Each structure stands twice: as C-alpha cells, then as structure tokens.
Amino acid sequence: MSRIFVTFACLIFTTLAQAGQTPWVDVAPDTRLRLIFSDVLTSEAETMMALELEMPPGTKTYWRVPGETGIPLTLDNSNSTGLGEAKVIWPFPERLQTYGYVDYVYQQNLILPIKLQVKSSNPRLDMKLILGVCSEVCIPVSVQITHDLTFDARDNRVALQIAQNIANSPIPWDQQDNPFGRIYYDLASEQLRIEISDSQIDMQTMIPTIENSFVMFGMPQKSQTEGLVAFEKLGGDGMQDLAGKNLTLTFMSPDGPYEYSMPLILSE
Image (cartoon, rainbow, N blue to C red; front, side, top):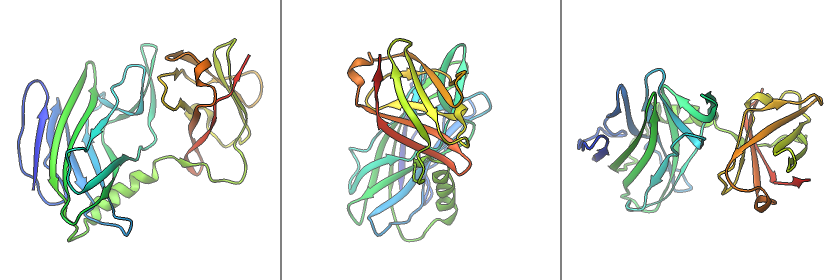
C-alpha cells in the first residue's frame, strides 16, 4: 500500500497504489510522476526502483549536476523503515544551452533508476523528493511517497525498464588504454584543457565536474591544436582551493557512456 503527498501550488494529493508502482501524480501542466518497483531482492540485500516522469515537449528536469539554472533532485529517505541508502543511477543527460546558460537535462519521458538497501523483511519506503520541472517557468516540485515493499513476485516489465536505463548510465572507464593525455586547469586563461588520446571519444558530449564544488564549465571548444578541447569556467568557487579535488569527465563513446576521474591539476 502507498500514500502520496504532493506539494505543488499549495495542493495536497493522497491516493493508493497498485502493487509494484505508485499512482501517477500530476505535478505540472501535462506532467506527471510515480515510483515503480522491480519487486526483486538481490543476494546483496538490494532492490531497484525508479522515478518515472512523463513530460510534454519543451519541459525538462535535471541531471545530478543541474547546470547554471537548474534545480537539483534531492531524495530524503530518512523516515523509511527497514531501508538504508537510496542511490540514484543517472542516465547520460543532454547538454542544453538556452539564452547563454548551460544546463544538463532530461526531456519528455524519463526513468531514473534508484538502488535501495534493504535491512528488514518488511521494509516501508517513506521518501521525500524535490525536483525542478521547467518549461517557460521553473516549478520546484516536492513529493512525499510512502510504499510498502514486497518481493513476492518479480515485475519483469519494470525490471527491464530499469535495466535499460542503467545501461544508458556512465560507468567508470575500464578499457586498457588511457583515453586522455594531459588534463589541467589553466589559471591564466580560466580554461579546463583536455588532450584526447582516443579519437572515438565524442568531445562535444564531454561534461567536466568537480566534486563538492559549484564550479560550472561552458560548452566544449575545439582548439587549433589537434586533439585538444577547452572548457571556459562559468562561475562558482575559486580554483586555487580545488587543486587535488576529484575531476570527473563524463562522455559518450561507441561503446556507450563512461566516466573518467583524476585529481584536478592547476597550471600557471
């Protein structure tokens, strides 16, 4: 059984759910969301669920790093019983530049996988979600959902949907060859500069992020130097204090999406 509480334009909705899914909840014009559950408990005491979001053309929500104008998704699972950490597995996003601002988004239909730790035989989800749903205006949506998890019968349809979206999520680079040469932030030009060793990497898909930082980078710029791509710093923290922080490059390759991480190097 599930109960859903939605805060949107000062309205509250309460309803019941079918097994393996919560009811659809309208959160913006022509936009609705629900949670879906695989109803599978693994030998590692984990189960998969997902946030399913249907949006009309021109409406978007945001990646783990939302960009310059986006609202990040937050999950609060602290009121649940018999459940531990809820970890989002992020599919590869779309980079969108609007009115000069860069954001990382999902448009139209989205299934966002979430891995749950299970700590009891009768777990009860009590989760609060906050996310941005944006078209011409940006609406912060707050949803609270409770749901009793059961593992009596696998939901094959949901399990397949979740697996397909996990396949679209970046994994750590596991190839033998290093895909990059020198990677550093040039303090004089205020650019992140990356030498690409693997010609199969699509430099236009590259997204650099720095752990625990609000630093944002612009669109990738191809240099006159072959294989070199540069990213302008858009704002956020001063770079001097970020030396040694984890820099992650998220990108597409012919084998799918990958992530490559290394300590941030500063250069004069």
